[in-house]
Each structure stands twice: as structure tokens, then as C-alpha cells.
Image 1 (cartoon, rainbow, N blue to C red):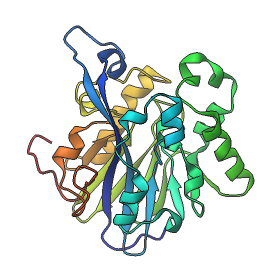
Image 2: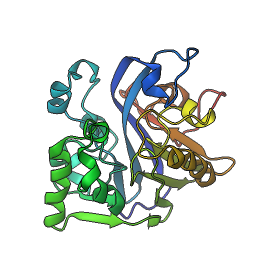
Image 3: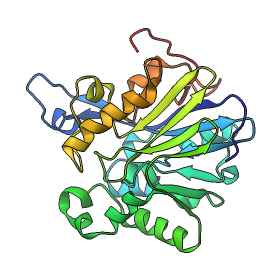
Length: 272
């Protein structure tokens, strides 16, 4: 990893799904809730001496299997290359959790070690994983892909909170999944907390209303509290699926308009 220098953080949107029902967005949806769109991201943390990818998204094969080819907006590997972090050069990937839209296509990163919370893997290889409410959000090859990498000595296990490099740390928060971890980055422009699915939308956090798919409802509420503590009063909490992120932060680079934004660039809208 050895990131070094003034860290920068990017969000890359690789898919966008419209018509998401309120019952999916909130654990207890009400008649006042409306449909919205759901964005799908991977995140890049880059320094002067390296970069680390946070999550890998889902690939085209899984999109086809799940009937979601039409939501794909492009290949995130193209954006990674444009940001100076080609897939073959990445030596570490942080997986926030093992849901299909966060950990697919690991074979496209041939030289990367994978970092995961031990509790997350224990759950998906344990007795509860086959229950329909859990089973529907994972793909077998994603889980077995991590198992194979582990047998090859290519998985880095975290157990709770851990500092990975100066300014970069992971924190197990749970709630959405048993071992969900979030990533905190200290930059010259302030703290950025990549919430992943600890808060799908900003509304989940600000309204104190968990997403519909949860391992623990009380755990999801506790994760909200942890996000706020990790960010502090002036930090930025980046929700995992909110399309508004693309409008609130500046474009990452010329040619990546509508594809990637820089989260360390400061919000471009004052309602953040």
C-alpha cells in the first residue's frame, strides 16, 4: 500500500439503477417515501507512493445473471487507469463486505491482496448464510474466490479496527452485514469516511432509518453513530449508493465527467 503524501479519495460510479422502491431504501418505509435511483460505486484512495481500491463492484457476467446489464455505465477499470491506478498495478483491495455489488470480478486484479474482516467471512461460511434473506445478496463465486485467495496466502484479515497506513484505517461497524467495515481517510483537506453500505443514502443516516437489508437493526443504528464519531464535526461521510455524491463533488479529471468525482476536492454544493 505505502500510499504516502497528500491522500486523495475518488468515487467511481459504474452503474445506476432507477425506480428503486421505498421498501428497499428503508427498513420501515412509509407512504411518504418515494422511489429513487441507486448508484453503484467503487472508491480509490491514492497517494504519492501507491493506491488502494475499496470494493470492486459487480462485473458484466453477474449483471447479466441478475438482469442488470442495462444499469451498467462503464467499466470502472477504465476510470482507475485514467486516475493512474491500473488494475494490474494495485497491490491491495479493501472489501467492505461480500455482497455481490461490492466484491465481484476479483480475478481482474491479479496482483492484489484482499483485505476483509474475519467476522464477515465467518458469517458467509457459517450456518446462517443459506437463509433466503441473506443468500439472495451474494454470489457463490465471490465467496469462493476469497477462499481460494486465502488458500494462496493472498487475504489480509482484519479483526475490528486497524490502521493500514498513515491516514488510512478500517473499522468494523456491522449492522448491514455481520462484518461490514468502513474506511477512514485523513487528508490535507479533511477526513473522508467511506461508509459503503453502513449508510446507502444520506437519508438513511440523517433520518436514522436503516436500509431494508440488515444483519442487525440495532447494529445498523450503532453503525450510524460510529460513522459520525469517525468523521468528527467537519469530516465527510460518503454514503455507499447515493447518486447525489456525483453532483456534490467535483469531477475527478477531464474525460471522467459523470463517471468519477474527487471526494477530497470539497463539495461543490452547499447542502452537504
